[in-house]
Length: 257
Image: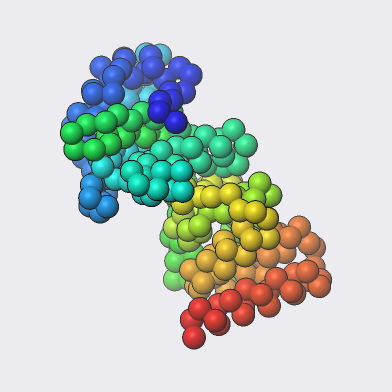
């Protein structure tokens, strides 16, 4: 992918004098988080608000990177910009109806300093990272959030299952990479740079669920079981649920011992 712009967005960018790659690249905007300096380059994110021609406003996360590449099997020497892989994965999930940030712009160009790449996605309004919600549950008491937990956890399991049904593995399924709408409980996957397709759904499932299990130790045993039941679409514990529980427990012991 070399360039992409969602329908209707060129007019919004032009309305804000941001109708070219150069204008977006040179936009002066505060960093939402400190730029990441690695791989011989840098990568940073800004949160920007753009008035629309119709009088409304859109909020975007504008990601920019320079000479920030990774080696892949079809580019083993020069590599490719890391945002290119993320943009490819975003388009796949957006088109597959799997909840992920909506990409509105992607473009890349060569410069004397290496690749310059821009990726823009719409802000997830009303969403919080799952790890922050889990922290609230833990600090303020599990019982207080019983209804919220029962609404949210099955929807997290649902979006992860849909990903694996396409034999896709997130490869970094931490609670901070799952965003949840605090009111509706709808779940959304972010940070898709490492997402890959696996040979089988089972391989994708074990990789992600093992990571999720080990990285969400604050979640109660009851909620872990609730997640597995929803993921496997079971009403009660059966042979398959028990087998997966034991597999994940064994993987956790092996990797933490």
